[in-house]
Image (cartoon, rainbow, N blue to C red):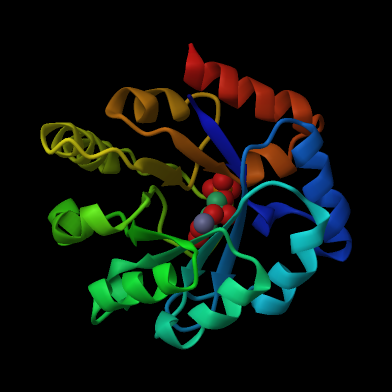
Length: 218
Ligand code: DX5
Ligand code: ZN
């Protein structure tokens, strides 16, 4: 089963609640929230107050992607704001196992994110502790970038490794996902897809979301 997680990064921030409700009605499975601090990535977006404001707006799981340095310092705030998933970058965590346990201690599902160049073996020793692996298929920081296809072998490698070890966790793809790029990702073993510009910049967002999903399922 394919899940689509529209990224609100490409939504109109002046009417965020409506933008979230619209994609929920269009068939979104999760809402992806991109948190950027201007240090880990060269852009600044939003913090826990926005997650808190969006919590009552939708029934969908809130998938909070932390592109920030020292994520441990903010996990409690994002958890209390209503995050269902919190994903942290392996490149930003000095003590990854501890960070994962911290997320779990608040009853939130932990996930780990890998930048396009980061070897997938970096997370082999935490796979039993997490619910989700997120592969960046663009360099994090901005919506609307081109899909980096060199990430696909890593996705396949993880998917095979999970099978060999009897593990079942979600594999999410973030960056440049559209009707075309979703196909090789599904073949490689991914099942959750973030899409920002391909949905929010479309004239008919429902049609765009449904077409991406159908393309992934076909
Ligand atoms: C990039 C963010 C993505 C981004 C995806 O740093 O993590 O979630 O919004 O946007 P698109 O789908 O436009 O590549
Ligand atoms: Zn993201």
